[in-house]
Length: 194
Image 1 (cartoon, rainbow, N blue to C red):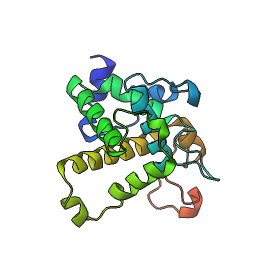
Image 2 (image 1 turned 60 degrees about the vertical axis):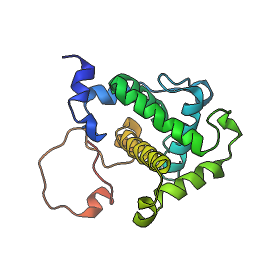
Image 3 (image 1 turned 180 degrees about the vertical axis):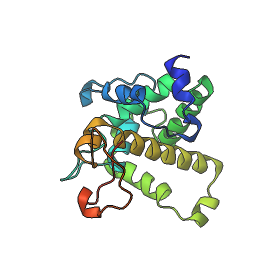
């Protein structure tokens, strides 16, 4: 069994997998300068839109690095290129193109967009109520699904990055005994990193 089959077998159909060494090493291998990143799978325009959306979903704060600091867009691009089937890759590109179309830059340079354009799209779709979602057209449903997928993958990639796992989440490289009930003060309210 090759690595691609092993990763796919871990539950890619759900969009999430356990952080296996192969996945973690792929994430750690995504180290680039912002201006030098050329997507492996996506087009440059699609990569630009992905970077901007991921930056708004997981921004840098005073207490933690953002998604761009741990190379989440690069990881998503590489992950899809290495693990998705041909049909999955085509679907993913179609969804990103739906985002470009929603932003009005499908056949234009997306660098003309302002951060507010991305913020407005995220607000319109990811803050929509169930009633609003039920009234979405097929095109809007595609955009909504694309944004939900990007958000889910971004959060997963962010949490499995070495920087976040070791320096932001509670981390014990050699776990000891299992303690069922511990005080939240012991981890300072942080989730455990795996």
